[in-house]
Structures are given as C-alpha cells and as structure tokens.
Length: 398
Figure: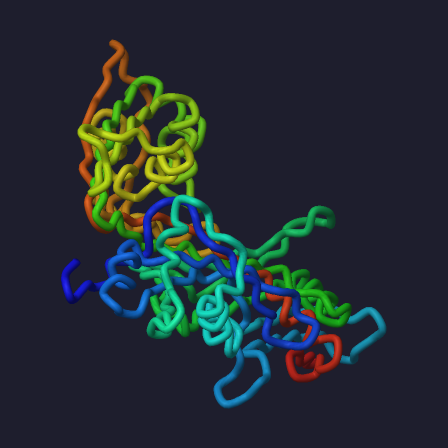
C-alpha cells in the first residue's frame, strides 16, 4: 500500500447509509441524510489517513435572512380601498430565497455518529468502505461533488377551484454548486393568486410553490472499470419518445428527456449489458448486481451515448435558441447541452423503419455523474406564519 492515498470521490452505485438528524428547530421532524463513503476509504484507512464521507443534500428549505433567524420570505398583496370583509384583490408579489444547506450543526453531529459507529449497518456492498477504526484520525465529511444545479420554481395549481392561478416566476435557472448557495425568486400574482396566497398564509399554510433543484452529482468507480454495451432499437425508440414529447414540440422541458430515457430502458428500446473488473476480480468480466446495473444504466454518461446515437435518426436540430427557461421550462440538464448545445430540438414526424439497431461500448473508469432531484414546498413559511404572520405578509389598500 502506498504511503499516500488520495480520496477519489463517493463510491458509485445506489447504496448509501442513511443517518437521521434533527431538523434544526424544536418540533421539526428528523431529516434522513444519505451518506456515501469514498471509493478508496479502505486504502485511506490502511495508510493511516482520515477516511472521507460524503452527504447528499436531502431537501430544499427557505433560507434565513442575513444576520437574522427570520425566514427570507416576504409577500405583498394589494386590495382595493376601502377594505371590506370580502376585499377585492388587485394583485401582488412575493420574494423568497431557498437553500439546500443542512440544519445548523448537522455536519458535526454526522461526523460524531460516524466516529462512534452510531448508525445502522451500511449496505453490504459498501460496508468495507466505512473503515474508520479506533484511534484513527477523525473522519472527514464533505458534500457530494455537484457539477451542475438547475433550479426552478413551479406554481402548484389547486386541484379544484375556478381556474389556474396566474403567476409569473423570475429567478432560479442555473443554481450554485455549494451547499450554502441561495436561490432567489420573485413571483408576481394575479388577483386570484394574491387572494390564494394571503388565504394560505392566514391559515398557516404554505404558499402554492414548489422549488425544485435538479442536481448533477459526481461519483467515482475507484479502482473498478465498468464496461457498458449499449444497443438502441431506433424504430422502437421513436415510439417511446413520441409518447413522451409529440413530434414538433421542443425538448427537453421539465425533465422530459430523462423520463423518456427511463421509459426507453423499461420498454427495451435501449438495452444495456454492464460488467465490471477490479483488483479483486477473477479473470474476465464480472457481472454486476441488478441494482448496480440499473443505477449505472441511468447515468448521464449513458444518456449522452443514447441521445448521441439517436440524434441524426430521430431529431430535427436547428440553430435557433432553445426556449427561455422559466416556469414550466426549467434549464436543460448539463448532459443534454453536451449533446445538443443550445439548439432547438424536435422529434421527427416519421419513425425510421427497417429494424435498425445502433450499438456502442462505453468504458467508465473514474468519475460518473447522475441527476438527482430535491424539492421544497416552503413548509417553513407555514410554520412561521402561525405566530409571526406580520413579518412575512403585507396587505396594502389602494
């Protein structure tokens, strides 16, 4: 074993250890944080170096204002004067900021649990990488590397009522890749939407917004090498894609490309055969478990291969700019941009015929990226409105 071993990154695959921590305030429910060991933790421990672990941001929450414990949220509604018991709403707006940061002190509590082995048994496949032993240096805890973050705010329309709430959202788009990054939004209300937001807050309910972060997280294969044989049935793939986004309509749009890719795997339009070799492998390739194979088949690297193979046969690609990101049209994921750039992409009307199959072999050794979505529904605002409504809501008579 060499004297110096350097961390590689969180181990690839679907397995993780979940450590529950308190939510950060009295009465808050526990938060389950997924912890992944470094792919080379066994070597780090053997060399007497600190083992390293990585946490995945579990949720989106409303951030606090700088230098204060108050939430960074403010809503303003306008009503026609004079104000009556049934006021006439004229409109309004709301500003707020969100973050994926863990509750205060959570990282230190997780490190202590890892040091004391005060947690459930890790999944068998990664158990040997939880290698911190008595007398070893304190383990390190960092966030899973994030290479891209697409942030959007979606208005959740009520299931019943006279019609959709008309709101326009500014802000979001590309988010930061640091755990402390804040994403800010400005939401403008129609009269009906302003009434709905005010009613929600007065009833100590959250505004009808959902903040969604699509994170591109980076993992590592360590000393393993992964070989993936990809086979694409072009005619069948056109049928799956047409069911997801009709011909002529722009892609990717609100996760459509990722969802269509998964549907293609399920339908057999895309088939993969994944094998791996490593230092402890016997001679020849070793078939990986089904859960690991499924995880590897949904990586960004595989999506890029499939859409690159299908690009010329299935899509019309023009030089026009893609639609502006905004409500209902979040920014394209990083892997999509690597294939299509900022072009406008639509599915061709006619499906190719003739039973054409396209194949490619992908060799992966080292980093691999996977999309994961975390969301938040502004529940913190609902809790704060129960006791401090005036801090977060202003109604102006005009």
